[in-house]
Length: 162
Image: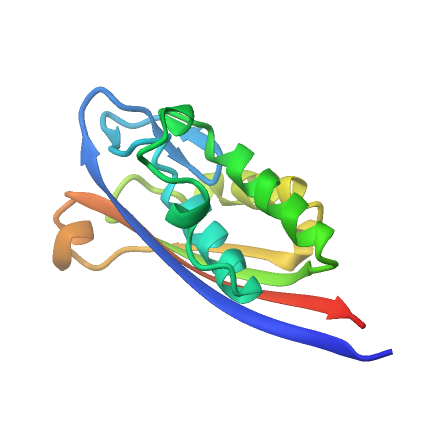
């Protein structure tokens, strides 16, 4: 039996604004500002969705979940992850591993990483050891360092047995 492997990368960034919850990796993080966006603006889940979509060769997140559609207004991004997971399974793809980096000067995200990994693993239907999430700062450099926004990067490896 031959195994087909595909890799994809994803990136997302959103501006920090008042009067929005801060949701990253499906975790509501106590903070005085949140991320602005059409949906819940979960940069981590958007980046990993793009990585999975890219690995499958399906374009990008906006192609599948356009911000012009009202049904995605304030949508829980975990629903998008589950939808993509179902589409991958329908084509016999499974996530072999996922590695993600969140870029934020503040707040401290390390206490929330385990829950983010658990959420992602549950939504993708994979073991949590296949999901890695880490957070870093930029030591004050760039829009993340100036606390104007938060960004995330993701790399997904998909496999399919033929």
